[in-house]
View 1: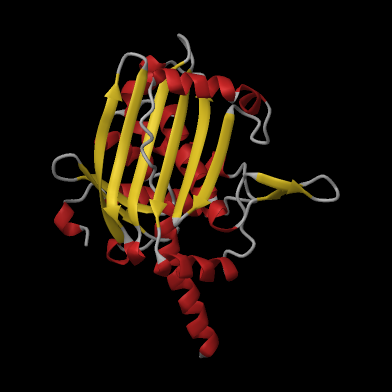
View 2: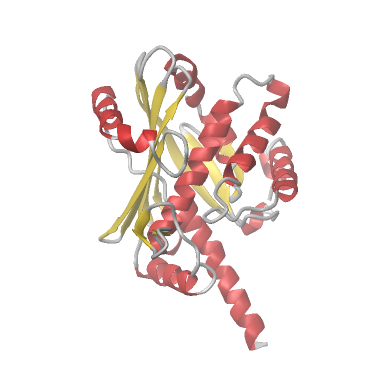
Length: 299
């Protein structure tokens, strides 16, 4: 009985933590095209040579009750295609729903998005956490885009959820993307995270190498920064899958996004321990179908 109670407690903490980790939505760092282009130049070596074997760079930080993650990536697609595709609340629901923990996403009143977050298996929306984010196009020019998703509060006293996506044209055929997310956490969230990291999450790691073992193998970052990095990657893969399926006929586009997301996540089994392909695809097909139902029938 005690063991069952302990297991239930771990599952509850994991459910809360998936929300804290998943919705650490980016701090909108008001940059501009010139600043982002300069960042691309500064990261040239990291983008050309890295463990991801593609032009991608990830970093994270933890300080004074705040967690933050950033990812930078170069796309072999023109800004003229990617910029318009990333604009629009409905497009962001198509992106966010690819994440295993996002159970539902719908445009709400005004400039809002309603997002339901739960576990990485099928569950009713009544068991998920509902958030409402403000969607904002901060800047949109012929060569630079800055989007923001903001929510002021979350579970366990968390606050200041900020998501930002920037995109700049490099030339006529390439673009450079920056995604950032951050949130503030209090005592309750810190204790829940510490409990998770001491149990179910004790062996989970992120992507940043913080040292080397005797045989030269990397030692990856752990703890809360690892949680942030894993979800940074999940969201990047969602954006990448969404953009990668743009040339697919509309009727097959959502299925193609799901396939691309899961295939990419499998490249990183050490960090991203996702549901099996069949399980993920079945779950997401059902969740996408559920989103077509009237709002009053969902809960």
